[in-house]
Image (cartoon, rainbow, N blue to C red; front, side, top):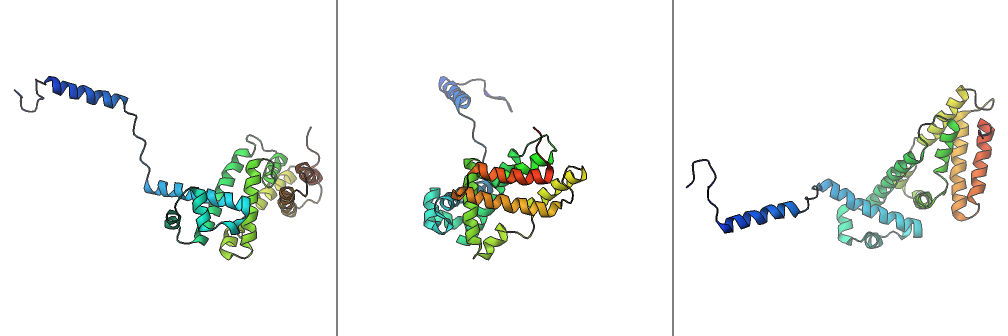
Length: 235
């Protein structure tokens, strides 16, 4: 008998067995993975495409990055890549934007925390343009491939060489703080020195990539200029 609104008082052996199996399955079944939104799934696929572009650019140059080769390197079908991007220029621009975002994340982790020393911070910024480790060497190779392409591609140039100069401005602000504290050579112009340091670090990094200089030589050049501006580093 079943009372209104109450569960049945009797359950057969088969009923109990089914209930036991259901409880046991619920206890042993792994928790379902959190659902991935359509936007997250699309971004993940685009990231795979971007990483494929980076690998091709670093090893063979950006001109070698055909849509078919990008798809093969990403382990995706050509149709899937074309579905993600309306055109190859849009794909290359998005891959460049993602590279900038990646480099910024990694640079933030490498900048020394807990210090306000201008020299240490300027040195950290400049080292982002030297191939001091495989990670930065890879990024610099990709960026140089993009730079060569940006000379004849206005859409890429707009992303690769924006009108503002945030890194030069950052280095200039650090040198200005050092000057305000009386720690720079007389007559130091922070903005001009920042431009020279950034241009020098960029050129030296390319020389190291090409094997024209050793990394230690490039670092010695930057140390020389920092000594000239800020005085010798503290022992």
